[in-house]
Image (cartoon, rainbow, N blue to C red):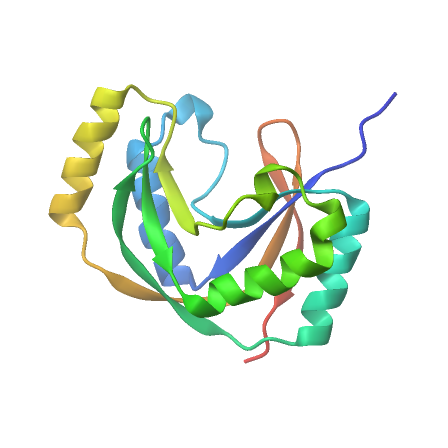
Amino acid sequence: MLEPPTFIATVKLDDESSRRLDRLRKRYFPPERNFLDAHVTLFHKLFAEGLTILEAEAAEADPRPFEVALSGPFSLGRGVAIRVESGELVALRRRLAARLVADLSAQDRQPYNPHVTIQNKVTAEEARETLAAVRREWIPSVARVEGIDVWEYLGGPWEHHARLPFRA
């Protein structure tokens, strides 16, 4: 029996910020595991019903673009991420999660900690070295959230499914 398709929802950042974060991911993420560009995940696993709710809520709320702080790197234990700070992003995610509550995975029911993973599934020593290197060169900045991207999960790679742009 075929598994129903699953979808991932991510934040669409401005192009300049996306390129900056993706350069770090390409530099530090193990290449044999790096199927994706850098991203901020909103929801890790949605089925078709949840996707319909997400699309309707995004259209109904009609959000505007907003800024988030890319404040700096932190340890994931066996990887490194860049912290994304924004009360507006957390509030948006909370509103969407409230509508999706019946469809949320266990992972998506956890407290929301927005970040961009630039390295994962390496040794703890390699992660410590990466964290030190990124801390030395990191300059905090502001990124612009321009919408939500929806991706279909294909067992490793993702395929772009839809963009839910925020009105300018």
